[in-house]
Image 1 (cartoon, rainbow, N blue to C red):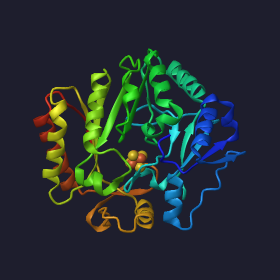
Image 2: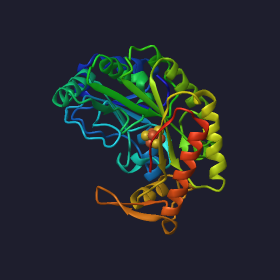
Image 3: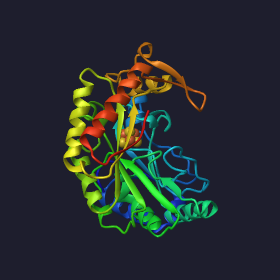
Length: 336
Ligand code: SF4
């Protein structure tokens, strides 16, 4: 095991699956704290204040078996979320999951992988001959826990055989060597989330560094996978143009002539996210002054603060010009 988690909580029903029993025996050998949940309710994670509860949650792995097999939709990047993993042990200060995982945001791997993939097969059947795309990272970074459940391996191999199903996920982790040798049949797209050195160092705690992410993307490309980059969140720090130019230049060293998809996402935040971030990271330097931003109503009834129209135009112009300058075969999927 990789030493990230301080404790592992097993849902009792998950122990009916060999993957869970395997994780249990490794955890016993390594002396990791083990707890059990008889009902699926997760208790027993310590936390003396908001910040402590948050970090203890991040250090907790739950091994479960998902009984709810209706998948959430996942627009615009895919048709459905594939619920293999939820939560993330990384600690990006700006993370969109920060307001979703409760006070103790544990990571959960679902070990009934075959049932989940069979359910995906039913969705594919319903939509065929249309292609159905499943997103494996809608509520997590699944690479970080791949060593526990092997969920990505199973999914990649499953979709390799699927005529009408496709799989995609995004990560900030370079630990992908085991995925390179899999039979993927070009049905899986793996995107790396990248950012400037300053953003990674300041805000993306417990993730792989930029060079390792770029090298990992290159290895996957050489193994025949479709590869993309998500640049986000884009921050308009002083010198942002120079720093993002540097990022694109560095990335283009290896990918200049490759067919690469880009997704560009500007920084945004909600009031509840800001409040949560300030409790957990009281010294954060994330730019979250509402008076400098434009308020936009979100689709779920809450509003978010985004960069204003002029700034968004600058971001769009900058990335279109520079991606076209440094990459010969790039596809910009969207800039938001
Ligand atoms: S790696 Fe992604 S999911 Fe994990 S904390 Fe960072 S932004 Fe959130």
